[in-house]
Image (tube, rainbow, N blue to C red; front, side, top):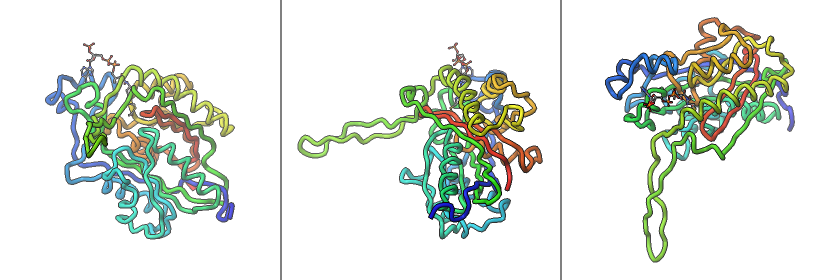
Length: 334
Ligand code: ACO
């Protein structure tokens, strides 16, 4: 039945979790031929958190989810849906169900959603559709990635950029206006080769003339300059489109909350949108690029620091592999 619960979406709570182990740029310079000066000046990154072998994507995701539920004041048993945005599942069949079991969310259906560093924004829009149609009332959206598993630790062009972590929001149905004000999602597979974590098959003959390809995933490869060019051009465009759909002017935006890939990308996008640096949320100095986790992780830190207040308008955008990119304009809080 349509709009059984009410068509509005509220973002009712957030949470995050990161591994305890921290790796500084100085430590990085003992692993590969790099320096704190190079990394900090080109990217803004100083530290990143890395998961130990006994830490899983599931534990980080469940911890972030639990904290978001606590802030929202919603019991796990009252969740209808858990969406796990990730590119680094513990199990290729999906990790969301394990998170559901760990949380004790017995009534919820759970599934993974893969859109690399755009995963959280794509997930927020996906969750909103279930709420707006009245299908589900309480949704837990988690963005989590453990990219340290898939980085080539001998490639200084990529290994310095990434970190591990998880962030989550609880999205609920409300009768009091829709807080997801506008969005725009895009993909362009023709540029897929700029950023990959690709499966490489090896020929494996079975019987007769039957041969299959059984191989493994190749660590992350990236054309940094092309990804940079793509981000600074496409991200402002997609934010402007989402703002237009939301009928929100740039002056009404309280916070710019971008995927935390590179400080220079954040600065360039803010510049193009004519947003002052004081409105740009940035925590990549401490976390590096945590892929699908980066937006909710930065959101959670800013909310808990008292920076983001209920009612604030947030322009968020994710961008990354696929290539995928997208923006969501939302109002924080119930
Ligand atoms: N330390 C020291 N030197 C390095 C390092 C390093 N860690 N990495 C590269 N270099 C060297 C290169 O070898 C090159 O040297 P050379 O001229 O002797 O060959 C030189 O630095 C310049 O290399 P560029 O690749 O041209 O460096 P650039 O200024 O473009 O900076 C960077 C690289 C930081 C990756 C930049 O291109 C960038 O930010 N791109 C966007 C990438 C990004 O954000 N990706 C993630 C988004 S998508 C997602 O989140 C999955």
